[in-house]
Every structure is written in structure tokens, then in C-alpha cells.
Length: 339
Image 1 (tube, rainbow, N blue to C red):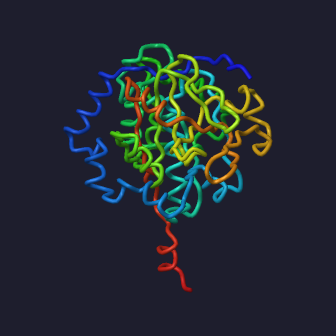
Image 2: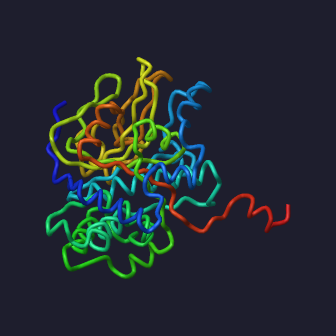
């Protein structure tokens, strides 16, 4: 299968801006660098993956929590305009939230997160219109947007199709426009921890601990081989999200990446991705040390070191925690209700 031709991928490479965002957030006391975050919030994060492997675990697939919550995987994004940064960040926030709900019982009901306010806030409220009139955003601005302003639930846009919402988001993200007040209000308080993982081993630890990692670099994802692993594809600045990791058949740790172009790389993106039954969407089968596994729609295994090299060469990677929604835990319910 040849690689399909895509519309604008949408990630804008601006290492200077990334450095600026990190410095500004650090100056106000944010734990924006992983070393500061782990010291302040998660002392046990380093070494998480090695400890899991020592117990015989060969793979962590964060999107499997969707099966526990919904009985099926969430539909893959079908990006048309250059909104990949907001979709990569949205996928990361969603995966981390689903992990918190299933593993930590933080909510009684799942919440679906919208990509659209992330896109407009990254370009306007955080990026201050630096990206110009064309589509695209800087991932550091999206990380700041969900950290400072929060994320909005999809219920705000239940009357819109995905295409309609994307077109609306592109319009509001144009220079001089800005995020609508009702979008900002819907996101208020639902903020997320976002921090910069400094090493590939810490990326592994983040995912093993339930923090998805949106990332971006100058290459799109290539077509997968017979084992379900993809290398770098053609040049094309693009944002996606690491949502899993696993030990391959040679004993190396690799990553699972979620795309924003519908069923790709299991097949070319199609309008049917928005309407066909989710269980009929073509999917990649991964062969790894744990056997065979069908990945979530739109996901593929990727070579960790190859992708990390590109992230280090001017790309970006941000670990994200679950957004803050009102907690209704099992323990809280048992205290309030008679047994």
C-alpha cells in the first residue's frame, strides 16, 4: 500500500517558542520539566516501565481503557484541516482521563473531550496569533492551553459533525478572532498537568504510569510492516500521540502511536471513518513479545528510538495528565450512601 496524500498536517516547528513557553511556565512555578514534575508530584514515576517488565508485563495499551468504559474503542479522528496539534493533545488528555477513570475510579461516567477549544486556545489565547492565518499550531502552546485554561467536553458540540466543528474551530482560530466565551467557560477548571519528558526512558515511564504523550516532528508515520511496526514516512510536520508501549519480538521497547487521519495506517482515510460502525474500521495487528494484538482504530506501533531522534531534532513531546473534573469516586459514594 502506498502512502495516501494528506491535507496540511498542521504542526508548526518553532523550537524558540517551545523554549520560551518552558521558561515562562517555569518562572511562574509550574513543574513544566519532568525532573521538577517527578520531584513535586510523582516520586515513583522514574523506573515504572522497568519495574513492570520485571513483573513480566510486555505491553501497556492505554486506549484499552475505552473498552472498559464504553464497550468499544472511540472513533479515530478524521482531520481535514491543519488541526493535528489539537487532536494529538486531545487524544493524550482523553487517554489519560480514561486511565484515571478505570484505574483510579475518579469518575462514575466517561467524559469525551473536544479538540476544538484546544486548537483555538493554542493559536490565540496562548500562541497570541503567532501562527498567522494558515492552519497549524505549536504543540507547546496546546500544552499550555490545557494546563492554564482546561478542556471542554464534547457535549458542548453534540449538534455538530466533526467536519462542521473543525471548520468552526479554524474560523475562530484565525488571527484577531479568539476562542468563544462559552468554550472558555466550558473548559474552565478542567485543567491538566503537562510536562516535558527529558529522556526516552521517561517517555516509557510516563506511558507505563498512565500519562499519554502527544508528540510532533518533521515526518509523518510510514506504512507498517508485517509485525505492525512503522518507521518514519515522508517529510511532513505532524503531531500525534504516544498511547502505549510494548516489548517487540527482539526484546526492544517500542511505542504505540495514535494518528489523526482516520483509519490510517490500516487504510487510507475515508469519509466512512466518521459513519461506519466502529468495529468495522480496519485496524493494525501488532506482533510483539506478548503475542498478537489488534490495536485501536488509527493506531500503529512505531520504532521508539527513530521517532525520539526526530523529537530531539527540533520536535516536541509533552506528557499529559487527566483533566480535573468533579470526582465521584467509589469511596465517596460509599460514604454518602447506606450500604
